[in-house]
Image 1 (tube, rainbow, N blue to C red):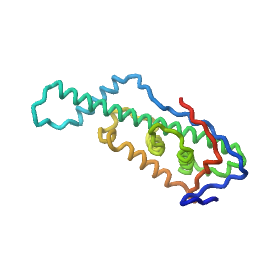
Image 2: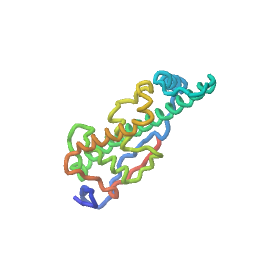
Image 3: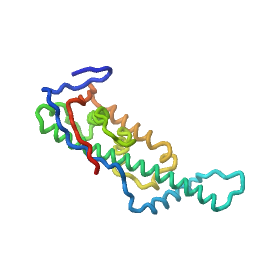
Image 4: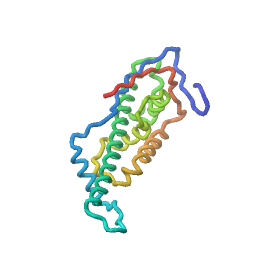
Length: 203
């Protein structure tokens, strides 16, 4: 086992590079009923009294515009959440494919623990993606995987409070990922990035 800084890297026999399955990712999402999504967001704005009373008289048109702006911000944050979740789903599917690849190769098979999937030991694959500098267009991979581990499928926007969509979603995803990764059995070891190659393809 190689130790570089405060990280440990597993030793892989030989010197060749191993090709991993391609990572298929969603870089954008299309919502078929954006009008319905806006209606749900408007309902959150109304039900949670998100607008503080104005100290000055306010005409109805200006108030409606403020409500519309808030609804738009909620929808944008929800879309970001779903995109993060989708990336997390894509990464977990990629890890499944990598697991199959490792199991089929004698020199890689010993690197995987045989625990119930997705065991926290698979967090080494997420670290590998970060070490390989996979372009994410602003997606935080750990948060994305954490959201996917938390939700089997993305709930509708009506399930979330405005506080969650504005402030809490990233911290929830990160906390879930850190809790999952902390269950990794010792010794916690990384996969050496120079020994693996992969392609990132857009779905």
